[in-house]
Amino acid sequence: MATAVMDSEFGSLVKVSAAVWAAMFYARLAAASLRPGAPRLAALLPVVALFCVVPFSFSTTTFRGCSAFFLSWLGVFKLLLLAAGRGPLNPTHPLHHFVFSASLPVKLRHLASAKPAKGVDPAPANESAAGKILVSGAVIPLIIYTYQFKNAMSRYQLLILYTGHIYFSLQLLLAVVHGLIHGVLGMEMEPQVDRPYLASSLRDFWGRRWNLMVPAILRPSVYRPVRARLGDAAGVLAAFLVSGLMHEAMFFYIMWRPPSGEVTVFFLLHGVCTAAEAWWARHAGWWRPPRAAAVPLTLAFVAGTGFWLFFPAMIKAGLDEMVLHECQGMVAVMEQSGRWLAGATNLTFATR
Image (cartoon, rainbow, N blue to C red):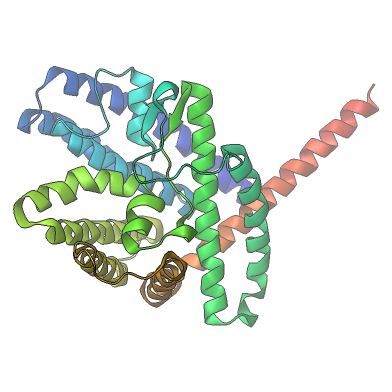
């Protein structure tokens, strides 16, 4: 059963990939032919519509979630920025660069210009993509194995387990994408996650360390336009509001259930606190906690509010059970593949 599901998903992935390449070929041609503004936006709307419905091509939460995040959120925002003549997409770039930049949660940069983003410390040299794949690939099966004891865990132990699952899954996904981008295009990804456990403030956590492609998209599309009209605090609140709404949309794509609003409240709360933090920081001479205290305080606030608002929205909808079931199915597929490979190897040696 699991094998049939995965075969179907990979078949859908091939079809979706072909559709995305064709759509981005058209989008690149349209953007190169039309000036930024209403005509370019009108020409790109069919591609936007395609990106919004692509996740429904898949039946598993893993594929729906990834396609929703890559295409229905980041891809759509990149296309809207392209319509305005801004953002990371450039129709003068080669087609394969254009497609990868539009359809993956990355911002490409040439190796020659690969410098750390401003305000982001370079990660240690041993934190390579290969190392992250090995570490995440070792930790995630342990987390999946631990789920069988979930009934004996407290609520907070279980939420910590979910946090680890999300972190290492995101790290694994981005490391694999980085490896593909580096190998296929000879280019580097800008950092996507930079040791969030070292964040010393909410601004540091959300702006410089966690899932950095999201703030990279929200800054030009939401924060800066709102800030130019209503001020910095309004820009921050607008960016967090949009982030919350898009997370609700991601949950809808994954679970096919109407949003509860808890995730939006989570991000709005963080937006208010981040704006207040920025207001406090603008007052020179006002007291600030030392870094040794700021880091645990920041992580405690993120974890505490996440346990209060973010993770319960997942658990109530049964997402944890869905993901666990799919992970167990993937393990079964890998076991079957391993047995088949072992049998084929033995048969090969036996016939020699």
